[in-house]
Length: 174
Image (cartoon, rainbow, N blue to C red; front, side, top):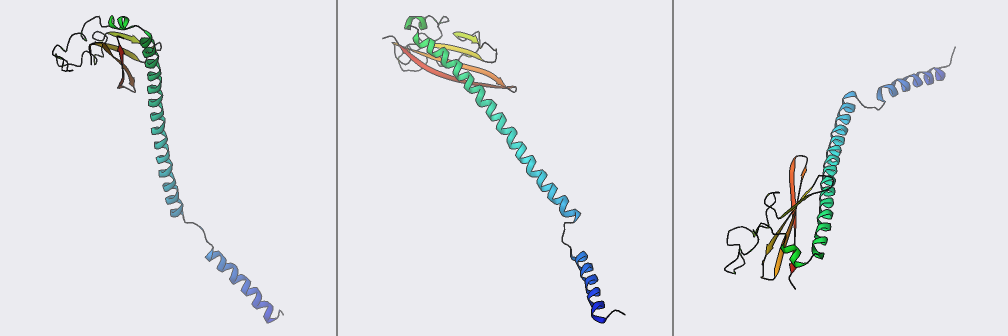
């Protein structure tokens, strides 16, 4: 016959095992579902931010490319003489529009500098890849009689939305 102490020890081992099974720590199914949902929302937010960053980088790339192309054209124009630039204003919309000398276009425009259509601009050129359109306008005698104001306008489409910016420079007759 087993002794009393051995029986008690055996019984305590069984009770301890049973208690451990009842007290075992772990996660319920609901806790796991909530954790997965929170993680999913966080990952979706990060993915959305990534898409926005990619779009921003794409726009910055386009604008940089357009600026470089326009800058190249402006450098060529700056090397041109005053009379060469003067001849670009073939339609005369930037000539003699400030008869009273007040610095404002007498016709209410901007000396033809804002024309950005192929039929109204003084000069139009498409980029070699066809993505960008460059329009150039010359205003003679603006802001002074011996100055040419030149505006270069770059236009392109970015995911169906029209984008545009312009660069201005002046050329002196001297």
